Length: 147
Image (spheres, rainbow, N blue to C red):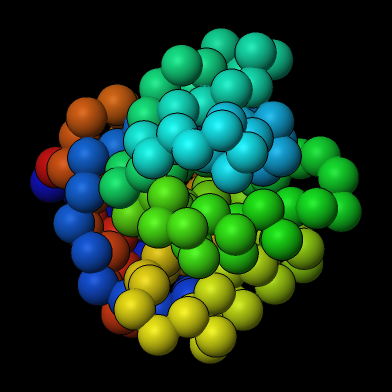
């Protein structure tokens, strides 16, 4: 097991299997099927992200460097949470962008029965270490354990 410490964007405790991307996450392209076509598993629809394309994101520990894409990023994350199609957590090696952070924080504040802990600034070592299907445990204080 290896432990990493990051900055808390949205606190929470969760354990989930990892899904890893070494590319930025285009939130709209990735979650479009989940939001528009009822895909409850939130299968990644972004063909430009070979690490994630076709993989289920709902209920997974989504490990990535950063988000990319349009100003809809925060709204897409909020809607995924509201529709119960969100990742179990989102873990960023780099600082999160303000739009994605806004979606995660608003979901945490406005949605009573939804949790999606978000931790950023975990560093490149985190992203180089974690692999798909490793068990990730996130703690309220921004500690991330990878097994």
